[in-house]
Image (cartoon, rainbow, N blue to C red; front, side, top):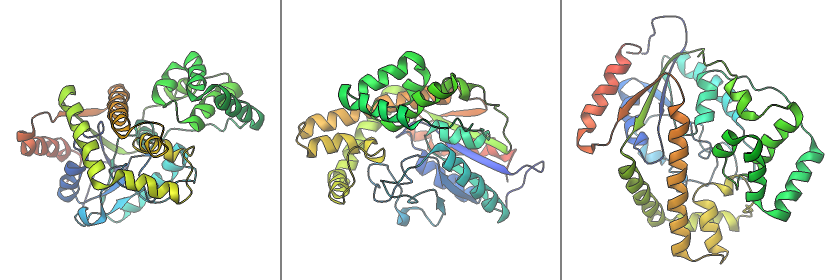
Length: 317
């Protein structure tokens, strides 16, 4: 059972860059503190996208419930607002069963939106503007559209990949409709949590992290990443879909389309993942309330676990 020192619902969060070791540690923590895991990854919501999203197989979850996985098909839209709504409900449900809600993931905006109860303003939409921006991207390329966003909202452009055209257009649309950038609106959010909140952040030596990223990509390829992407394409999921623009999917799809060699696609995937990890770390480092744990020394895994347990002991038991 989990208890807190006040009446607020407890919430544990574990963040860190891709390949830092969140998954293995999350299972140990969940068992120790009687927790249920909520995926804080914006890509693990998609069915059929398992290898490329590093989704933990059901048989490997050691009996611990995992939520926010496999809830959408790849051609269905998914937003941070939906993530927040679903998670808020899940947190109350898990807590009502005397279990500890435990968000684990690396999508910073999604995790923060729940941890601090962000309010998303309904700025409306302008269909003609979206059509105009989509046509611009079609004519001049996704990078040119991304450059337009960078000119008015550098923070959002750093967070969004150039190929994530839908979200780039939405960021441009927010500015078009309100006169305020999306990053300005995010900065204006109150960082006061409605929960009894504890955030653990994992970090490690950058060179070692990059080696782990490259090893993970190699492992994904051995597990059948190419076949997974091929199956999705054969099922009719277009490369232009937001889900198919995710790391691992867009690079392998370009190889399958004959646009680049296999070796080039793999190298691009490793490079893009390193860049993604760098963006993740930048996002997390500007968050407050994070207790950082350096997990560089793999031989100290037990010590790292005990360090985290001692951090949590004052809040949850």
